[in-house]
Length: 225
Image 1: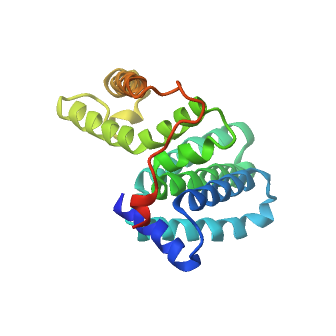
Image 2: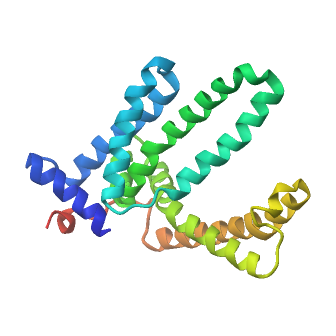
């Protein structure tokens, strides 16, 4: 939260005009444009998009946000996609497989930056400008849950490894151990997510969410100070 507040303060001090909500709206539009461009731009224009995304990465790292999970996901996609392209199309199409993985990775980077620099309540407020309040709440809550669920997944994975589950990177080279990963990690994470979603829904209900046409959001006055 300190890093996010610092990011917003930096923008306001530079312009003197943007509030936290307005800055969040600009960040959301920028993320959508960059993520869409990753799929629609021609291959020869990807270099410029990479340069823009690199600026977002530098900004996120400057605010001490962790990008290691996203990098691991990109490497995993590369490791899965290239063998498939080789089997289906041969060696001549491997470069196309790299471009496909690169586009997917570039599409995810702006989302990482947005969730790392903007608070869920600000995102919910901005999304409610064009979406029903309940939809905006669900989307913002989902974005806010991503870092928490990632940490929960790491903890569950580490605990299951200590218990002797065959889910280490070396063990997962054998497809026979993949069902154990589902039972030991994915199902507990899903159960935890459902439990947390139910708690959030109950908390929203206790705060009378949905009973007024224009729900309130956490004020940005504290962030402006």
